[in-house]
Amino acid sequence: MIDISQLIYVLTIVAFVIGLIRMGNPATARSGILWAGIAMAFSIGITFFVPGLSNLILILPAVLIGAIIGFVAARRVAIVNMPQMVAIYNGMGAGAASTIAAIELIKLGNSSFNITIALAGAIIGNVSIAGSVIAFLKLQGWIRQKPVTFFLQQAVNLIIVAIGVFFGILFLLHGNFLIPYTSALIPFFVLTIGYGFLMALPIGGADMPVLISLYNAMTGIAVGLEGFAISNYAMVVAGILVGAAGTILTLAMANAMNRSVGAILAGGFGKTQSEDRTVSGNLKPISSEDVAVMLAYSSTVAIVPGFGMASAQAQFKVRDLSDMLISRGIKVFFAIHPVAGRMPGHMNVLLAEAGVPYDLLQDRDEANRAFQDVDVSLVIGANDVVNPAARIQGTTLYGMPILDVDKSKNVIVLKRGAGKGFAGIENDLFYMDKTKMLYGDAQESLSKIIQELKKL
Amino acid sequence: MIITDWAWLYIIVLAVFVGYEVISHVPVILHTPLMSGSNFIHGIVLVGAILALGYATNDVERAIGFVGVVMATLNVVGGYVVTERMLAMFKKKGGDR
Image (cartoon, rainbow over all chains, first blue to last red; front, side, top):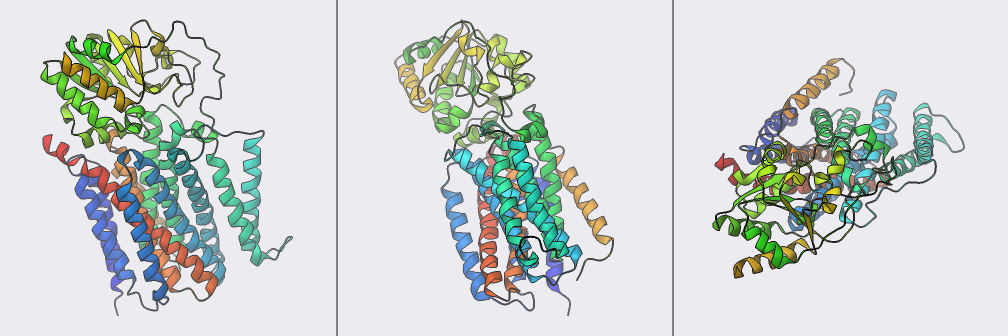
């Protein structure tokens, strides 16, 4: 009998590739996920009919539990929290790869080649699930965003992962050391997962997008390796595909933030140089009435959104404000830094959600050509991406291309408080003579400005 | 099927090449949805998780396999819904271009 499942798997891979290609173009992106989704459904469906499969009484409820939790959680989460959802679902995939490895290793019947592959996949999967969980917790704000560092951290991490891998090798070679080799899997799993936690802790919130992308690629590789271990072609090809695509994506993201992946993994963003730079000038608060007046009598206004807009869910108010200004005959554009917010393209997604017309959005280079003619730049919860310190050699931000907001005639910064950005360094822009600060939640501040504008 | 011959190396090399080609010219604004989309695609691990649980022969294996299937399904379903929600926002924009 021809094994029809293999045929379905091949078609699935084709649909995955088509889906990825379509997702890479704004006009066809939406149909891309549909291609991949339909193919996935067929692949999973046919797997239930693979000969010799038992334990269906366990498989069906497990799928049901996962599907319900996954669906409800993904539907309910606010768009602003999407990055951490990607992180946690990625971690789940990595965890699943590790469980496959665990079962294969327990069975022991395999060739030593397969054990090696399964162990390698398990190491990558374990690091990925543990790291993804940390990324989720940091972005969700359940643990501190700031890098966690301690004495001899790198050395301690290295020793832990080395001991973990050592137990994996003992298992492979049937070597008994301290414990019988059959038990060596337990310290192997515990220590490699532990390493995953420790590795992610020193990495700060600002670098999370790149890190999540890296874990995504790692999960792909882990899935591919476990596909090898159980001789499943679909998993091998799809896993390696994601591993390769994810690696390129990780490098592209790091590049857009002017960070190297190596520096990110070393951790402790902003810790390399101590921030002893003093910024001259002082912070000048402004009232929402004055902001409204300034805006009303401008001819060109630039809106510069950042994570503050996302966390306050202020994108709808931003749209209201821009509509009002446009109806008064004021020229408005949005200056979008590619890495403003938590992920590349974060701002585009949020503003699209609020229905801001696409042609009002300008990318960094376009916006930087326009700032000198801007009367008022309204910075809404952006910090590091507008910090002129990026032009000063020796600062942690040095070299990152920024939005040249400081070139505009006036700057108004909407900000929750006087704190620093992710990078943890002072923002020279805020201290400039032409800059005024409007403190408070972005949504509330914008509401007040809109109220005042209506009176004018 | 036990992997013995070199065909696998060809498969991997080609898969890497396709993965590279597909991603390398994507605009920055699509990085996040694409990451989410590829996150969904490695949800194919559910196939392996079902097979692992389906061939499990003792309680330890069944327990691990059960956890694996739940996690893999979360990856598939959650990954799909998150990606779909992100990409839904590009619909109007696509038409405007």
